[in-house]
Length: 337
Image (cartoon, rainbow, N blue to C red; front, side, top):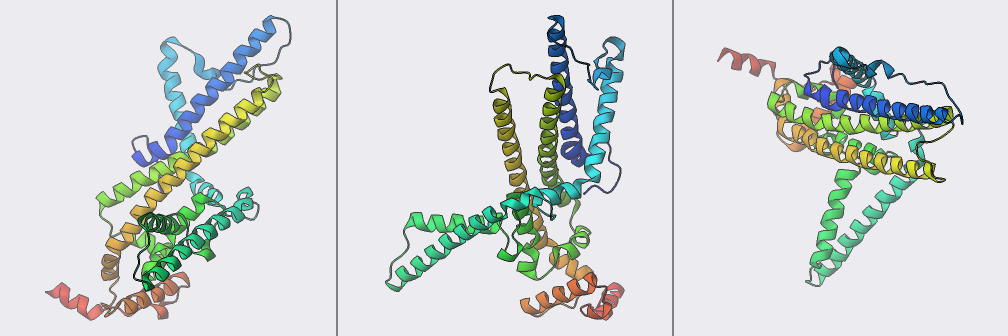
C-alpha cells in the first residue's frame, strides 16, 4: 500500500493506479464521443434525436487550449488514481472473495473441487510410486513430471484446505500469506510491517515493482467492468448501439468477457510473481528481524518456531507477558565492544 499522497513520478503509483485511471478516461471519452457522433448522424436523418450527455466535451477544445486540456485530463486521472489507492485494500479483498454478499462466493465450490482434484491426483501418484518402490521399480518419467508439476501447482495456487477462498486470485494471495506461518511459525500479518524495516531498499524496490503490476491489472479489471456498464447506460440513453447487427450486444458482451478474463488472469499471474518476492523476503531476512528484536538465539528449529508463535500471540493480543525472552545483557555488551 501507498501510505502518502502520491505524485506523478512515483513508479508504484503511476503504474499501478494512475495508468489504469488514465486508460479508463481515454476509453470513456472515445465511447461517449462515438455515441454522440452517431446520435448526431441519426438526428440529421430526422429519425430520432437525443440529448448529448458527454461529460468529456470539456477536453475537446483545440489550439492554445490543448496543453491546458491535457493537463486537466492528467489531473482528473491523478484524482482517479488517488481514489483507487484509498480503496485498494477493499478492492483486493473483494477480488479475493471476502464478504458475505460477495458474488464471487458462488465459485467457492469450484475452487474446492479444483483443489480436491489436484490433491487426489498427487496422492494417487505418490501411492503408485510407493508401490513401485517396493518392487524396486520407479515411476515413469512422465508421471514423475506430472507429480512435480501438480505438487508445485498446489503450493503456488492454493493454501491449505482450511484457508481456501472462492477465487483463484484470492487463493494465490492466501498461499503466500500463509507461507511464513507454515515454514517458520510466524504470522505474516504481525511480522510484515516489522520485516520491511530490515529488508534492504533494493529488494523493497523489486517487491514494489512486482506489486505495482498486481495493482495495474487489478484496477484495470474493475475499470473495465465500469466501462461495460457505461456502454449499457449509453445504449439505454440513445436507444441504439454502436454496432447495427441483430446480435450486436452478444458480440460486445463476449468481447468484454474475453478482455476481462484476460486481465483477471494477468492479475493472478502478477500476484503469483509478487508472492515469490514476499516468500523470499521471509526466507532471507527473518533472521535479521529476529536479531533486531533481541530474541535469544534458538538452539533448534522447534525453539525458533516457538519464539515466533509466542511473538504472534503477544503482538496480536497486546500481551507483554507472552513475549519471548530477549538478550538485553548480551546486546549491552556488544554495544560496549
